[in-house]
Length: 104
Image 1: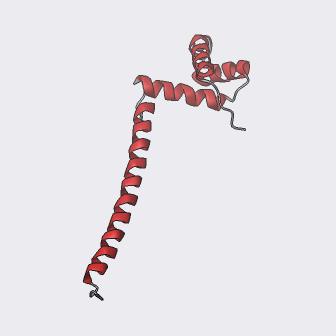
Image 2: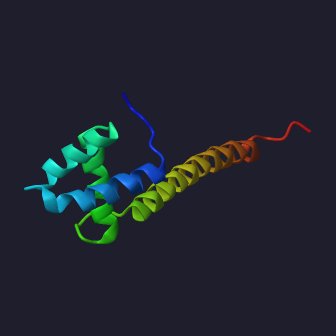
């Protein structure tokens, strides 16, 4: 089941994970412990931790800001391609109209 968590919940969970890590032998052990306390999936918390590390520059990867910008640009490119296609079709239509002999 997909649940939407608030940004405050995400911050709290990550803070709790950071505090719990020293008391556990590895990251996944701490993740399972904190996720159990909060009643969420361990995978959700693990992904939040990974995203946090990428955004902080600790781990390599595409940051959240960069991913949002890429998505925005891809949408813009798609809109521009659609506009170009419409303009191309219109120019073909009007070129045919100009080539047609006048009936006047």
